[in-house]
Structures are given as structure tokens and as C-alpha cells.
Length: 79
Image (tube, rainbow, N blue to C red; front, top):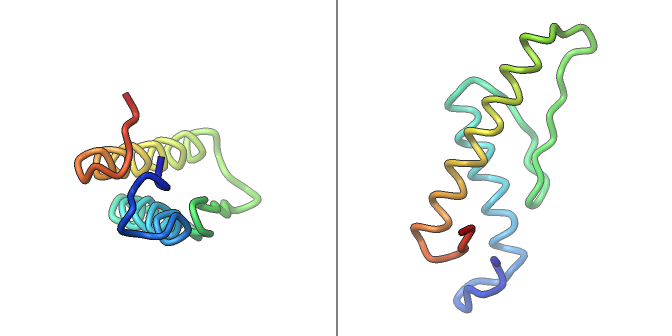
């Protein structure tokens, strides 16, 4: 989907996606390491199920907000 935007290189768009997800997650209290279009999470080795659920919930919101941005900007169509 990102390759359809002629004005930008596909790899540049991939980096942008990772940065957007990272930014939204940071706003919500989750630190990630964006690697191109992926986001790496590094939870502690001792973590409760509740904390894992919270971490995954924040990541989901970050991804959903990024998807909304990309659709609004005409970069992607997830429908």
C-alpha cells in the first residue's frame, strides 16, 4: 500500500510508519524501538499478565491511530 504514493520512496514511507506508531505509543506511555516498519517491544523479564495486556493494548491503539493517519493522507486504504 505504501508503494502507491508516487511522491515518496516506499522505504521512506516504511520508516515513517514505524516512527508514527512509536510516537503514538510514547504518548500513551509505551516505549518502542522502531525498526523500519516494525516496532520492537522489550518488556522486562518479570512482567504480569495485566502489564502485558496493557502493553499490547497501547500498541494496538498506536497502530490504529497510524492507520487512520495513513488513510486520511491517502497513503493507504485498509477498507
